[in-house]
Length: 263
Ligand code: 13P
Image 1: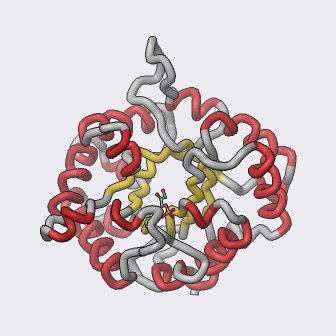
Image 2: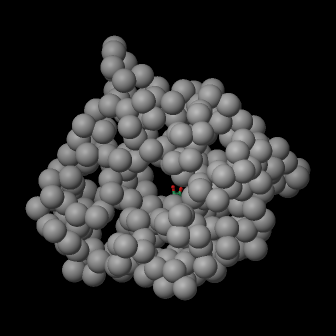
């Protein structure tokens, strides 16, 4: 049983996939089968260009009102001559409450380093967006026994600039890079071990954070394995990529989150 204070959370990250038509179908089916949102927070992160329209679809359908919107990436400034970038303030204005920051695809493919990630987290907070901070080691780093060292480094740059008030709301997503999109997740016991480490890390900043901050797992979470993660005491939900594109699979994951994490 999770402390009530950490509401279970499942995030759908569609990355640069789908279409408006697919989103409409997804939302329609989600509305018909909505899970108990008193027991689960669901955050949808569609490609940014659709967010405004998605917000309108949500407002039109009462069953979807509890669905939260997240943006996949925002810049570290609110306004200015930054062609192609997305302002956190503007994301908030069109209806986002959350923002992914530091996803491994951003870190690897777009060369975002820890310092930029930290600036983006700060800018998100200033815009009233709650950051979902993604951290995780590569296969090489894991093989070299550097997982905890890497996670500490990724967290430290961010944490040292945040007050307790902000830190208590952050969501951390532990996503081992090598498990993303491969169909091969990390074993649930190993995820639990990392999340326990992350919780102890939080306690170094303030003991209360250990109990307040939600820590998710991401990396090949699917309909048939989500349960194993949710059964772990220190996993508060999932950040789901591929499996969130199919509404039935996504709903299975959400239902498992409700039934297992609220037992
Ligand atoms: P997959 O679920 O496709 O492995 O992706 C995980 C992820 O990167 C979510 O942000």
